[in-house]
Image (cartoon, rainbow, N blue to C red; front, side, top):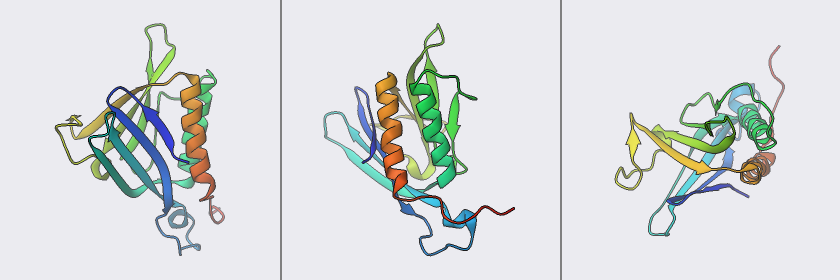
Length: 160
């Protein structure tokens, strides 16, 4: 199941497509690089784009899922952003003037940027998509990522 966010312009799906190096098991870091799939579709279905590329380590995505769940449950988080070693995908909270969590910004860079600048504007080579994310939406997004990650668990033992 893909993790889904929807706003008035776009339908975004994010999932794990596989390990970047499925045959490597003796190098802890290389064994745990994940290929992330991003699908972006216009709300009216006239345009659809999909990309797959290495985007996160297993434990980084797991940490992001935890961060999203904490936000969804209204608990304090260590930071207002969540990202990965490959900075091509990141998330940032959108808060009301009172400090309440009301949305999530998704930033896409480099390989994860849609090819058209007309439909998906960018600033400083970054696509910023904003989504209204009440707790149920945040938790469903986190659950979708967790379901996707469950098929590709952390492999090996970290070096000491």
